[in-house]
Image (cartoon, rainbow, N blue to C red; front, side, top):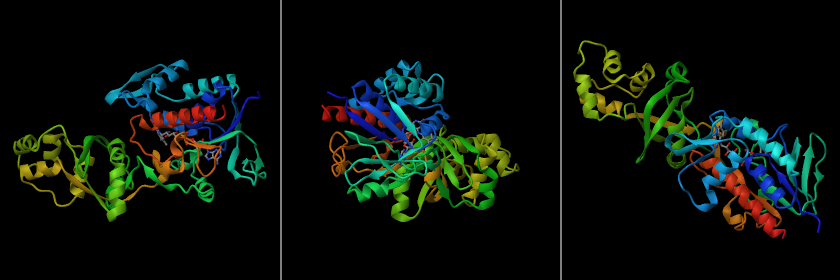
Length: 384
Ligand SMILES: Cc1cc2nc3c(=O)[nH]c(=O)nc-3n(C[C@H](O)[C@H](O)[C@H](O)COP(=O)(O)OP(=O)(O)OC[C@H]3O[C@@H](n4cnc5c(N)ncnc54)[C@H](O)[C@@H]3O)c2cc1C
């Protein structure tokens, strides 16, 4: 019997892991990628150390150990860093991607670059456009769409597939920024002066959740790990009410009473900035943020309480261009349990183009790899 032919659109981690599983399972696999090189977003993720997965035991679909074993099979030893996050020792993606592409070629996967999926022809065959040419049909026994979301569109995934899938009867949930920054109503001079400055060892609170981590002041407002971690509830509050109040604890390691005692010991004639700097080790950016939030109380306990809860009003998301990931996408109701599109039998979907979101911490890539493997196994099962 001839090998089943599978065409994959998108050479990100979801498409490439599916290609590997399919090729090992005996399929003839061609991956089409619209950019001049594969896995650009994975390589960009590597700039931040490449948080591959998380070491906490999850369900079997998201088994982190399988991903660590896979990376180690590519010569990329991994380690568990702070708060259980797993990274390759190289702390970047390029050695892993290089070794992976060699392995994919060895198992027979062909990658065609500058080839954009544009939909299906009248016979239901997938169409790909090379450069500026007319789209050409590439018949296959199965098509896997692994086109990513729409964050960092200059790296390739721009959400251009949403109209095609809507026309095909599977309108996706609207794509929205996830793990993203937000626009605050800071005065322009404050934002300009402190853009790019991190508030070290701070914590961010929204509603009843508080997260410790990096909070970076930007020209627009806030971004950074703690902001990303709360981005889903903040985005929902913004959508519901048009604003979202957040509160920054500039000294989450100390109780207000302790901070107040330290402040009370300072020379009352010293300037407010000097007292905050000397008693609480606050940075110039932290002190300016306190002032930005309105009149600063001078009495020690009231001042300490303000230091532990500086109000910042957020008024918009910072947009998809610089969001780490995308919420929304192909709805699970439009897929069967194997991730096959109900409206288009013979077409499967994997990775970030599915309608899920996860916090940073390794959960994104873990889910991207897991859905790629899951779709590939179901394609193999479907093709017998
Ligand atoms: C700055 C940054 C840092 C990140 N850091 C981490 C991290 O440390 N840990 C983590 O878990 N996650 C991280 N992520 C998220 C992670 O990179 C993504 O979740 C992951 O790359 C999504 O994989 P994917 O294969 O679904 O989509 P993508 O990686 O986006 O791949 C989709 C591919 O499809 C191609 N494509 C799109 N449309 C077409 C078309 N019509 N035809 C052909 N090809 C097409 C695109 O060019 C792209 O190459 C980070 C993201 C960014 C932007």
